[in-house]
Each structure stands twice: as C-alpha cells, then as structure tokens.
Length: 175
Image 1 (cartoon, rainbow, N blue to C red):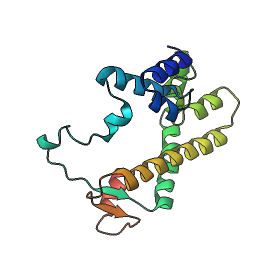
Image 2: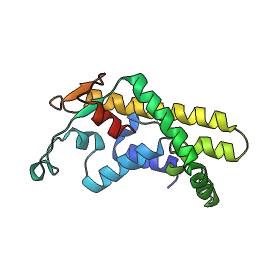
Image 3: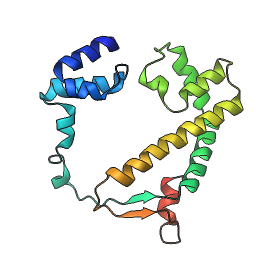
Image 4: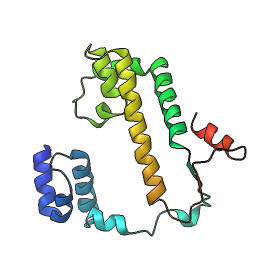
C-alpha cells in the first residue's frame, strides 16, 4: 500500500506509535502495522517484553567485541574496497537490470546507491568508494552504539582494547 495510506492505517490502529514515526518512514510504519495486526499489541508494548524466545533451549555465552573505533573504521574501509574488487559492481548491475523501485529496501543497502551512481555515470569510482566507505562506517557506528548501550549489562565486553589475548577474536570477526 502507498506510504500515506499505511501511515493513516497506523494512525488509526496505533496513534501513539504513529506519532513517533515520520510519515514517510515506510520500513518502520510497515513493521509497526505488521506487529499490531499480528499480535493485537503496539510494537512499543511488544518491545518492552523481555521474556520468551529460545534462551531456555540454548547455552548462550555472549561476548561483545567493541574494538577501538579507528581500528574498526580502517577495517570497514578495507572491506568496502574488497567488495568493489570482488563483484559488488556486477551485483549492482544485475540488481539494476531487474528495474526494482528505487525505494525498495535492497536499493538502499550499503553501497548500492553509490555503485548505482557510478554505473549511471553521475559519480566517479573514487567518489563511489569514498561514499560507500562512509556509509559502511556510519552503519558500524550505529551497531557499535547499539551494542554498547542496548545489550544486556551482564554480557561481558572487550572495549577499546586489542591485545595478544583477544587479537584473534577481533581479526577473525573483523576481517
């Protein structure tokens, strides 16, 4: 359904949640509608519930790796360059050939707008790489902030420290 119609539906079903969202934020509007229609409860109420799930069925040993920001950003930059050299351009070409709507979620994925601009001739390769790296670092920053502030306090953290005992974890995960 068109975003204006979806937003109106959310305003009717969950006016409190609708008031917290922008009227053009189709992703969050759609999710809020899915939750209220599927559960009969507001997504804001649903998010407050911290019970259920599979925790009783698994043995979870979380460890949050929060490396030094500059180190992480260097890895992000290298990773984006590797993606460009390993077929990302061809993947975006194939995606563009499908003529998907420009506002489809996949078309907003990190690197897709930048590579599409490169392919369309409106951005140089150097600029596409630079902007893709920036988008990657911004996403990493949001993840970093979420893990630092939202993950349960009891989860152990390795913060801003790479040493001989944890180097393996960082280098394996952030290759």
